[in-house]
Image (cartoon, rainbow, N blue to C red; front, side, top):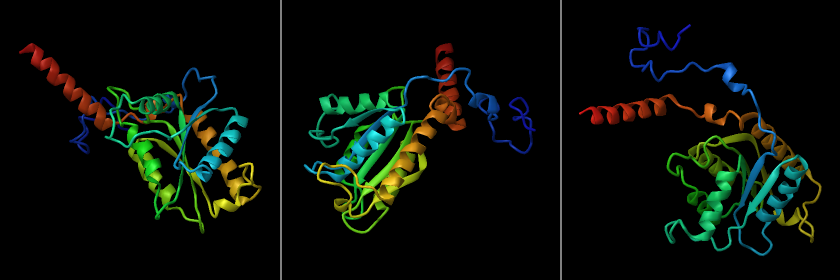
Length: 245
């Protein structure tokens, strides 16, 4: 078995930097102490309509998550400026970024419009940066995806958001929800009617909580990467050498 000490001497891996190589260890996936606070979930929805089905679906999911023991906050995208149309000191941008930093998991729910997620949904994601100094606001957080459709069932929006979740280095759960003909699935009070679609939403929220509880205490270890350790070590070496000169 290849160890960290023997990696550089092993002829099979001549390009490996032994100082940055780490064998994954089972013990590091079992932290000595786990967090006891409720899972913190942020919900984003992608429509500003007065009767927004993505918002109604998000609120239905919020009720389920709270019943499962989570602490949930829902971001209202109204008055959020378009990316680059305002400074990142804008109050709505700051609100969104603070919620992203607070959360341990997220739910993204978008209508499908012209075969894609809405611009409202994408703008929210675009305002969450990949990094803030040394902090990555989304890396290692869990993510669940949902969409609502005006017509027959489609998965274009959730598939697009899944790509974005990967780009944001999130742990996107396997299950997802797509509600077809959403205008038929909610009553006048805005509550979702009993259906197979509702049952799937329960499944998705349950899976999100399980994955969040499983990973939140070890997310820094799960997303720790050889290439980034190597890059950091090289930058440190260059700084030390500059000081020596």
